[in-house]
Image (cartoon, rainbow, N blue to C red):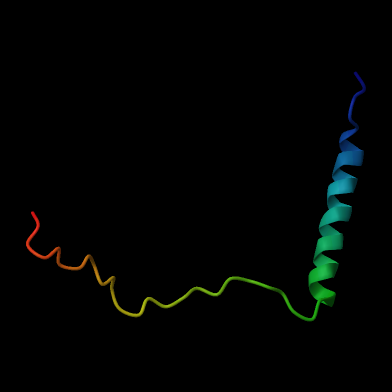
Length: 52
């Protein structure tokens, strides 16, 4: 089983991180989830009309 060189793994990780960082810096827009405001509570369950 071949051994994995830690230097190559580190270099590859740094190259990938730099690639992602440059992508964010050169992109005009980034898509992200905007949290929604909670407008009022839940309505709850309606009346069951005389059922138990």
